Every structure is written in structure tokens, then in C-alpha cells.
Image (cartoon, rainbow, N blue to C red; front, side, top):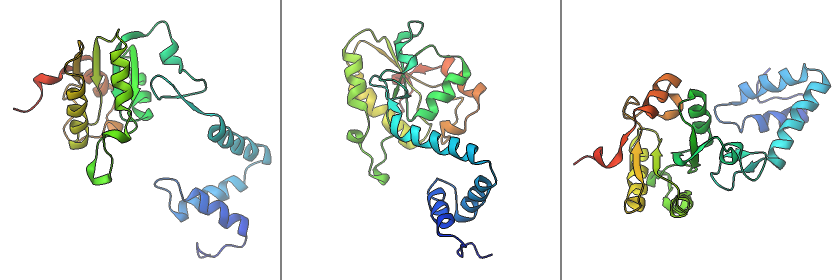
Amino acid sequence: MNVQSYPSKLLETAVEEFSKFPGIGRRSALRLVLHLLRQDIEDVDSFTRAITDLGHNVKYCRVCNNISDTDTCGICSSPHRDAGLICVVESIKEVMMIESTHQFNGLYHVLGGVISPMEGIGPADLSIEKLVDRVNQGGVREVIMALSATTEGDTTNFYIFKKLKDKPVLFSTLARGVAFGDELEFTDEVTLGRAILNRVKFDASIPG
């Protein structure tokens, strides 16, 4: 059967929706939909409820922008975390990755991306001012920049450094166990954990 010829409009609509996911073409979308059709209706209902609940009920932490079921995420509200450490990351995926290393016990700040003029993303499109506000509230002694070792990541590091350089905080970045050009998303847990533990002061790493 040609992928473009569907025996059912309902099937075609479902394939259209699945193919909107990153990395999912129409053939892969069709396989996923046909797999769902082979499942018990209770499993299909459970799947659709999970997606609907996610869309309607997921929240973003009012402190760090992490995904949460409540207004303040479990990390920010935990009395066992070190509130003096803020680890700045590009997205929620990096929070999950760093947490899996069990090497960091501070808080996070999710920027929502990195500065990328080629993609039309500037500082105003990110939650940089919210980070500055958190530092201005006091109690923060170190800001750790855990962004990908790319040109865009380094540009964002330097921009935030300039915003915070007059504040009484240490500004550090991941040790270069993460090679330049590497996306943090594809860094293994051991390397990432060591990069956090061996972080370096940022102003000493700026090229002269």
C-alpha cells in the first residue's frame, strides 16, 4: 500500500498528527498508529489520557522554569537542595541528564534555549532577566553555566556573564571534558558528572 493512500480518514488524521513529532516521518507515523490499533482499547485510552493530561495540566516551575505538576517544582521546593548553587541549562532535558549523574545538589534555571542569531533567538527570547532577578534576591554564591559546548552556548555564557559580572557570585562553566562542538544532550552521564565536579571559573576560560 502506498503510504499516501489511506483506507480510513481517521487513520490518515492520526498519521498526520504523529508525523508532527521531531524525527517522525509519515512511514514511521503510520507504523506507530498501526501499533496503537493493535492494542487493547483500554491501553489506547490510557495513552490518550496521558497526552491530554500532559497538555492541559503540566506546569512550569515559577522559580526555575522546569516542568512540574505544581507551581514550584520538587527540586526548588526541596529543603535538602543547596539554594546557593544555580545551574543554568538550555532545556528541561539537561535538568534530567544532570540529575541522573547524582553529582549536583543545587537548583536549576532553564533558559528555554540559547542565543542564536541565525535562528532569530535573542536574549529577550530567553529567561535571562529572570535569572538576574534570582541572583539579585541574594543567597546565590555560584552560577554554573551548563550549556552545550557550541558557539551558541559560549555566546550565551558570555552574555550572561556580562549581566552578572558585577554581582557577588562566582561564575563557572563545565570543565571541557565536554568537547567543543558537543551538544550536552549527547554527552554520557560519567563525562557530564565529571564536568560538573571539575567546573572552572568562567572568566579564566574566556579567550584572550
